Amino acid sequence: MHTFETITDLQTLLQQWRVQGQRIALVTTMGNLHAGHLALIDTARQHADKVVTSIYVNPLQFGPNEDFTTYPRTLETDIAQLKQHPCDALFLPSDNEIYPRGKKAHSQIYVPQLGEILCGADRPGFFQGIATIVTKLFGIVKPDVAIFGEKDFQQLMLIKRLVRDFYFPIEIIGAPIQREIDGLAMSSRNQYLSAAERQIAPQLYQQLCELRGAILSGSGAIAPLLIQSKIKLEQLGFRITYLTVRKISDLCQMVDNAEQASDNSILLAAGYLGKTRLIDNIKL
Image 1 (cartoon, rainbow, N blue to C red):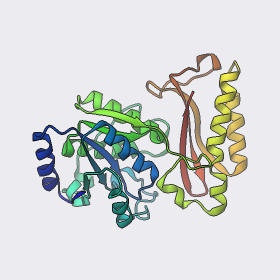
Image 2 (cartoon, rainbow, N blue to C red):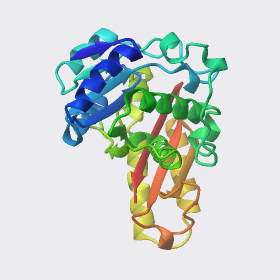
Image 3 (cartoon, one colour):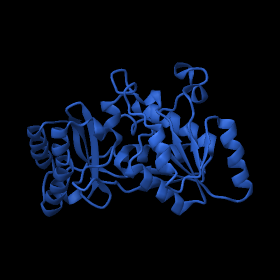
């Protein structure tokens, strides 16, 4: 595995691969890798000859009161894991390499509507930071294909829109959510959970499964079912920021009743358990 800290050195190797006719895949991460990240790399290998993984904790996607300074950075462990997976190049840029004039002076990418709802409403500026760093990495690597996890489903849809709007010649592939044995969606932030909270956390997914079953087996309005599930989760200790059924096509259109629920609908949830923010989703 080749490791690069500068854009110039990385692009020199990428150009060699292109001359050889190699198809290149990109997997973007913020490090603290777990089995979910490694599954993205395995998926990338299925769609490309060469796989580039980036590790960069992007300051633009963290709000003033979020965990940028405490976000877990485990580079040595990350590198050891990547060496056991089909990763051909690792990109480890510094802040100065990504934002040479500083993040405040850097151009930013704004995606209206889709970037303003759900997680975008809960975390102002978050998706602007996501769109900016992904656009930069696309420009640096110029991959043929990029893999993103479906756990961050709104992020996946936003990146697909970004690629369409700017005519990037990049195939975007969503990889299925990787879960712990008890159903909890894998996330780097799960390690923030206390032992007691870790026992409760899988209930978010369990409630989504029960809610999907209730929606698909019934008829009439979905809102009362959502309220019941939210109450159950809050009684367990969650602070729910949203629990909703949306059309997959744009996530802006809500699904109001069971008759409207279809393969093009998705149930999404986000909330806090203690200080840990958890998100999850399940397709209908």
